[in-house]
Length: 600
Image 1 (cartoon, one colour):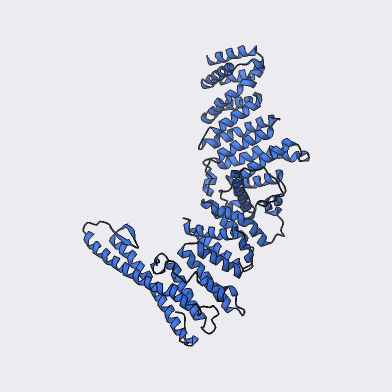
Image 2 (cartoon, rainbow, N blue to C red):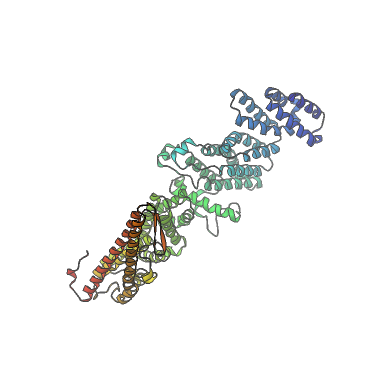
């Protein structure tokens, strides 16, 4: 019945001119064709499509059948039937109006979600490429529209983050990336072959669309993609292969690769690309950061770069990209920033990075970004790697650079552990300075005193939360203890003895008061907790304790007692070091021979 209905519609349309087809005819043809497919009359439908007499009708109306055929290919697992569906799809792509077919195929690509996205993309990439090749007018627009649609759908797929996920490729992203390269190659080759006629407007437009696609691909999926050493030599990492091909496309259709990578971000660029909108300009920053990582860390196309560039220039070039990475929240992204920083720092000699570089914004924001990773990242290996990179960065700076960075981080980190780490580094630099024949002015005398003003004080005086700031306080006391031992009052190389009165007023005395208050408070809480414990022991209820104005989360009484006793132990430790510092100061001010003084 459906076949007869379709043939009836065709017979009526065969006597009409192409321009006389009505909208009603298109609708009836689609419904009848859909019914033929649904009822399984595939062979009869194929005969109708292949009939030369129906050529004009199929050209104008046949694209309406592509959707039903594609859906059958997605859902039907019968190999015999699928053979006919593929044959029908090929015929429709060959015979139908390419302009209408292009829009129909892109609509089909936009429809699915989840795992079906990759299935339909893999199915339709070849037909889509064939259709676009038939469009001679506005080819650049068609390529751009297709690539944009494909990228939008691919960006919805999760990027695999482990080797196992890459191998299983559950959502088909890796397969799609490989297929997308094959889809794009003919258009890249077209631009390359027409470079002699580069003034031709259409070729320039096609080049722009391809560049835009490459930059988008560098952001997604390559910005978050993980690359593995063991897959590097074997060449079996599909995302790495995709990255290599994309960078190859950039070089082929853009300007020389070194010219492109080293001129990003300059006010006067020596290579051109599409004028990006504000939102896309941010995307370009992400893309160029991704490109820098792929080149310098993964080594893709690095052989194309000049080998005469200085390590400090390469670090300066990459610092902006590292900043982009560290501003992101995904672990897979900011870990790349840490790796890119390591790559740059390892090329540089210790103490050779000039302090003038810290006048460049990224040279201060990058260590601040490392601090955020160190303190907020849930992954321990990344926290440790960031700490190691911050230390490596400090090691590379000259003395004034170290001094400037220490001041910056002490003022901005707001984290006791980080501040303790910086104070330990200050102690190390003072030690190096005192051992040199010529003192380093940045870690002795007035400059050092200015830095110690940020270290040897309590932020809120005696009211400071000593438990929360215990790491910083212990580091400060150890630094002060070191200074008292190493610097005699007569020499006063560090300037400590001139400022001793201020240090006592701003640090030692408030610390004494704070310790007395804190110990009394916690001892009272221990007593209360023990009394509460006896009352609730029979009912086995949980009890709560308030410390420093905040309630400790409900926990068994014995656990709360452990927490309170641990706090008291910390206060005792601080008090012990404080007592030793004051003892040393008293000994030194009474001019006791230095040899009788030892570090305990």
